[in-house]
Amino acid sequence: MNTNQHDDLTPEEREAFEMLPREKKPSRILEERTVRALKERGLIRSTPSHVARIRPWMAATAVAASIAMFATGIAVGQSMGARQTANALATIYPGQTERAAALVQSTGSAHRSALSDLVQVAQSADPDEAARAREVALATFWAAAAEIVRLAPDDPMAARILQEFERARSGAEGGAEGTRSVVWF
Image (cartoon, rainbow, N blue to C red; front, side, top):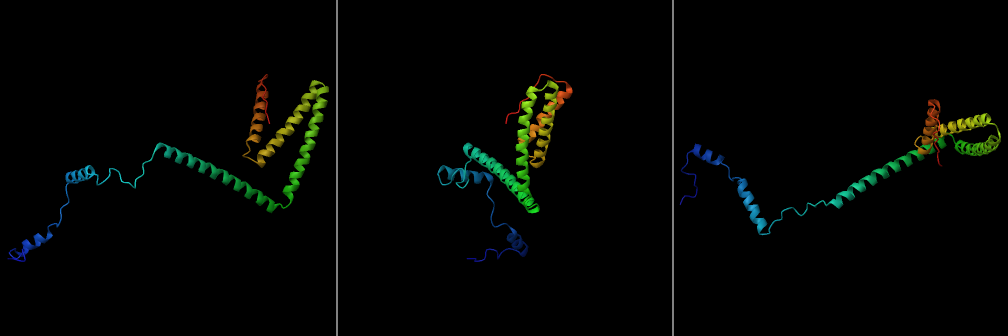
């Protein structure tokens, strides 16, 4: 019995024999048949168990959560930015913020009182004087709204008031009479 099966080969044949692959990859058809047979016997599943199926309610929940996280991030960022700005102003102008706020408070009260007096006087005055009084009051209010927009550019109420002033002014210049806008607070 020959223990070495390559003894009767020439060196060239032996080298060619050694270069042959030791295993052969199965064909795609054989692999598919094997997998199908294993599935039929219940030995493997169609989809791997580690792959989760995404259901519509899961997708909707994920979208809602991402929108909520995005909105929360924006709100927190704006809040932190406003707080940092207020802290920076308080650091730069210590004590002036409170004094300025108190001045605005007292001036606003005086302005409101003066407007109340102006309304009472205008009701008994001739129409030309009442119109001039109205113009003065609106010009003062417009200037105050413009300053509020400078103070808080993202405040929608102040921006809306200025838009209405602009619309009223352009309507008066364009001759659009009979239209009246009312801004509710």
